Length: 164
Image (tube, rainbow, N blue to C red; front, side):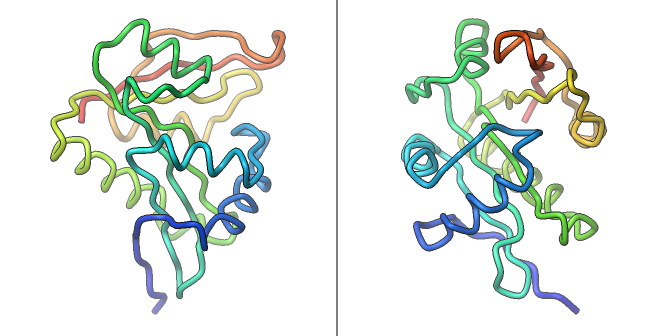
């Protein structure tokens, strides 16, 4: 039986988090350690899921008003008064069948409710398509509230919200 745990991320996890992100960069956006340090400083929620002590997944989320300079975050800030924005969630390929994404999202929703945050916001690619992300987010009641093109028209995202 594998030992699975969720915990707050810290600087000792950054190399593993950057490596996980790099492996899935086609679905997220590039992030080196300097960028991760910036995001970690803005994040209200930054947790890792470990399997047998190894960092296997992570989730970074920020509350509105944190000053995150990101086109998608800014779109939500213009349209919603209060929200918790999922900047990225990544599960390592070797750990996909362990429900780590579900555990992280359940914990995130608990965090939002316990902190009086009623709306969770995120986006995922629709061009190029990220069908696993769509199916995953559907399970948590996310629905589209907008879309936008990014990267000089190379990527379109579906802007989603769910009630915490």
